[in-house]
Image 1: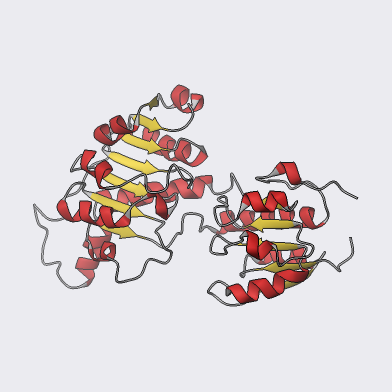
Image 2 (image 1 turned 180 degrees about the vertical axis):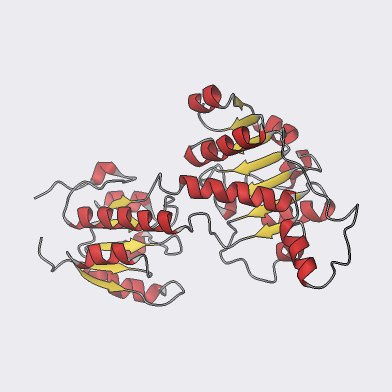
Length: 330
C-alpha cells in the first residue's frame, strides 16, 4: 500500500500506535488537549481514508458526508456510542473498537471506587490534610464493611464478570445480577444468581453498573430506583454517565436514600465543577480513568492502529462492530 492514504488522529495517543500508522499513511494529529472543533474535523476528514476517533468526537452522518473516501473509523474505546453506526454501515465505512483489553483495568477501578467510598477514604484524607485530624475518634469516619455483603451487577458482560470475580473471591460476596442474557460462566464459577431489577435494587448492599449505553439503559437509574435501594447501599458506575439521572442521584445522596456513590463516568464529561454532586461528601468522582494504565492504553493503541491500517487497506478489521460492510481486499 502506498503512503498516499491520509489519516486523521483526533488526539495524541500512545506513540507506538502513531508510529505504526505513520509507516503506512500520511498522518495528521490534533495536538491539543481538548477535542478538535467540529469545523476542523469537517475540513480534515475530506481527503481521509481513515480516522482514529475518541469518545469525545461525534462522528455522525453529516461528518461522514464530508469525506470522499473514508473507509474506516477506528475508535480508541470499547464503546462506540459517539459514532452513527447505521450511517457508517450504509456508506460502507468499517467501524473498529478495542474490546477485551479494558476489562481488568476497569474492574480494578470499580473495586477501587467501592473501597474508597465504603471506607470514606477520600473525604477523610481531605479532612486530615485540612488540619481537622485532632485525635483517634471512636465514632470518626465510620463506613461499610465488605466481607460477605451482597453485590448486584448490572450488566454481566466481561467487565461485570471481572468485577464480580474480584468481590466474590476477595470478600466472599454473594453475587446477584441483572442482564439481558444469562451468564452461565458467572453462575457456575461465582454462584451468581440472575434476578429482576427490583430484586437487585432491594437486595444489594453494593451495586456496580457495567451495562452499555443504549435507548433502554439511558436514564435507567432515577429517583424511583434509588428509593428502592438500602439506605446503607453504595452505587458504583464505570459504564457510561447517561445511565444515571445525576440530578436524582444528588437528591438521593443528599436525602440519605443510599450511603454513597463512586463515579468514573458522568454526563457530560467533564462534569462542571459547579454540579451539586461535587459538593456532596458521600460522592466520589474521578475523571474517566478506568482504562488509565500503561499496559491497557498501549494495548488499546495497538489494536486501534491495527484496525485503522486494515481498514485503509480494504482488509477485515481485527475488531469491528459492523462486519457486514468490511471491504474485500482489491
